[in-house]
Length: 112
Image (cartoon, rainbow, N blue to C red; front, side, top):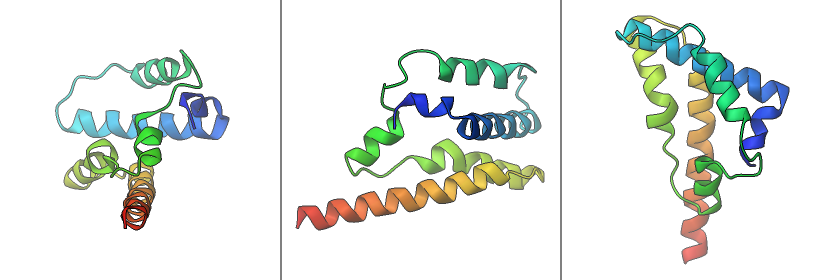
């Protein structure tokens, strides 16, 4: 799926929730983040070519390991450190980990 996936109402809501978790955790970690940052990021994601591939979709297509820990797992880890709930980041990290493992395993089977 390309970047246009964010235009699906439920995905946009998930992206916004992920960004809000990042903002909350980032603030606990000392970052000075604008109150309208989530709106800005979602708007940026909704602009441009909706058919352009995402880095995740490109990695899955190439059966590469996804960078789920650096993208989402770190938010969950910092959230636990600061006592900030990160249910969206926890869930997305688990799903991306499963997708990543399946892609890598499929590549291993195809390479044999």
